Image (cartoon, rainbow, N blue to C red; front, side, top):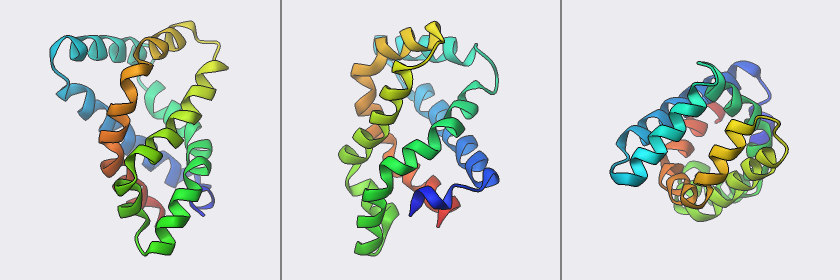
Length: 143
């Protein structure tokens, strides 16, 4: 199971660092008014602290991987869990966002919560677009 493979703190930290780089890359490529809003909001969140994004990812990974376990297992049975997550980016994104939605609902950080809520509607497409790269990151560290 994927959630068992990320129990190692070093593996989790490496995945979190690579995911933070992926988010940086995705935000940087955003254009137009939506891109300006995304870059501004992301800057606010990064302003909480330099290690906030990787730390948040590290804290979310156990729950996210648990949510992804059924898809990962289906992919393993099909022969390639990385490819399977990519091919099922809609389901993968929904699984990940269910975790972040629950976490944000319980956060005490008003800046992060308000920013997430403003962007949540548009985030699904961004998460879906990132799934192939995310699957590669997970696969490179957890397989």
